[in-house]
Length: 534
Image (tube, rainbow, N blue to C red):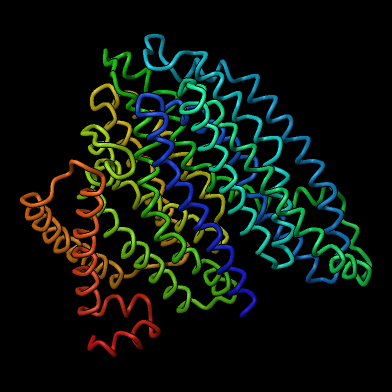
């Protein structure tokens, strides 16, 4: 058990650090290329992320499950055969994916920008998509290799390679942008072409890390292989059929957010054009890149804690331990709301300061951010409810419910954008996600006969606690306005630290005084809080 906990902790920490870096780098990058060019970056990255999610989102877990299964049977040869075949297959499919995306760069660009587009040219968007497509050559087989190591419950290669991949990507991205703009006096749009190429450069860094670990562990794996029992001689066709059965539900979890963003990419500019709204500011760039990066912060805070409970759900469901399963579901829903909601409320009230700190003072940017932040609760809830469905063997509903939510987004997006602009796109996302989550919860309730008035009561208490916290935050902001403005980033940081500290202290105090924090997080927290009189 300690090995499992250690492995999970290493993997979670590596992923978390990688995600944090993925948010922070946008601050210097934004200051280099400016608001008027930053949106071009997301025109390339959204289709790339979508293709990448389809190609690899389920690969590491699927390959790790396959390798772990046969390793547990003493058959180490089958996993090695899969590695040889899989790397070759992923290299071929990755190269084909690169050719496909490169060839479709111009049609994709034509679909995403309107004929009256004044901010980016067709050539700008086409070039950006072509440059980012090179990463597809490397990333797919890298993800398979990570899965192979995970199959031996060796999480360090995945964690370290993810971190190094992100570091190399960011160093290349910022370094090339700085050299092009500040040293040789090139254009910001040229800098963005190199910035999107950073995905491929970072992937090479990740592969080199995996190669180092492979050289280190290969003698040990060879010894296990030599002492292996007779191979089960699983055919390649059967191998890939089994892997697909593991991977498909995870793929749909991975593509959910990129798909919703892709709908915006395809429809936003044309809907705005049809309504006669040709903005001078790149509203889509703010919505899908600068604001979206910040919206994902509260999702990172909550999902790591709640997802750690998912393996327990599978275990209790398999053993038919209904009481333990119900208790785990109760804890999952309470934890996700307890952690995500105050972060969303606090960030919404501090949206002006946040946008200024990360980017610049922008009334439009901070307004879009404040309206978009409530969606973070849904972005956290969807993967949790979907993972619960996986744990209780109801994977087919993940696909169906996501498709229904996506169809709602697709059908509502254009009419809502025509009337409400970016708020319309946000509303369509919230409606689509809400319906998909509601259907997920409905399946859980029907399948497990799950009802919990206690969870409803506690969620109502959490809502009330957030109302009190919001009132204190608003009063604090009103007081600060008399003494500290927002003329500089330093002032915005000071305001955020003061208000965030007071809001967090109020929320923490109420949650401890009412005992809800102790009830959600268990005896370990209670042991410490008793020392302080709670």
